[in-house]
Image 1 (cartoon, rainbow, N blue to C red):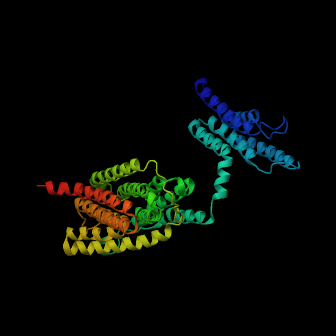
Image 2 (spheres, one colour):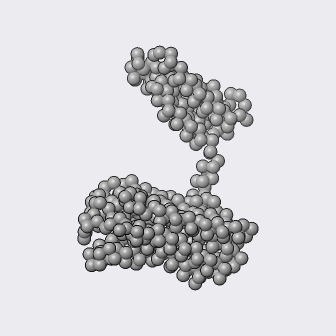
Image 3 (cartoon, rainbow, N blue to C red):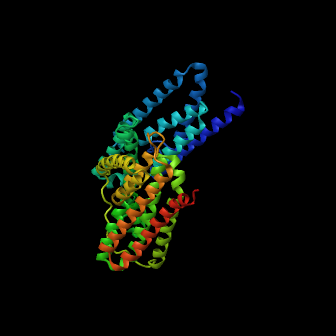
Length: 427
């Protein structure tokens, strides 16, 4: 091996061993010399041992690093059982496992996998350093949250890959893979929003409530905020800002869905969604400035971590709306597609988004024009905004209802206007 190849590998090995050794040595700095499990010198030597065995594998064979690793493992196991004989011994094996990982990192460096070794080492140090945070997270974790995450993983990792990626049903509008993929996206965003609210606490203010709650459901946030404003009128302005922020997040959520399902449609619908988002965010900024000294004064629940139950109902509704939109389009042409957006958007804007994205896909027979699909989505947005405005006025306090309704309807109107403009200007 040439020196210009040797030195980068050697010094990377040295630095990684020092990095892990410093972290472990710092954690055990209060212990007397001779009672520490392994520190900076041990970890550095182990990394160099792995490096040397990796270099020797070119002459002694690839089995040589495995033999050295087995000997190191035996030494580590013997040391561990020797330590456990002490009355106050630490029964954990973190340091022992870190030592074996350090040996493997040395072997990787000898094989010139410097980037991979550095990445593994950094992640290992972060995990070792954040022991308290990780343990607190585990103590706060609830069984239903673990179950919800596992359900989502089963659908995303096991069920989704085996579903057929082709159309079924009338007009081949029902694609099991795409429908399930939409469910995974929505359920993932819902779980992320729940986790954020749960981690940061519902009392952190209406802004976080709107920001993270909008990932779950802007309609649910509207209902929660309106009811809270009825019970705590002084918080109406802050809660109005929360609804406006959730509305802006809704536009981002729609954009993510369209981009995933139909990138050609995404290019057309992006401008209307961005303009609607800007209007909603501007309204939220005005309400925030009015309420910068206000305290929401209300408690908000994070909701349920299990979004798959809702997702199952969602996919059934989406499938129904896809078939409805197909027949409506056959019966009334493009006007039927717009009608389906109006009907489904009043109930669930995500369902209208998936339906329009699917029916305008190149993989579907009798493809809906992209401009019509964009109009259908923005009609759904306006219908959904009007429904939420009614909720705010009906359930909320007067100080929340009308300002909120103005922001919601204005953002929906500008969105549909931006989608309509190209159609009106077309020759």
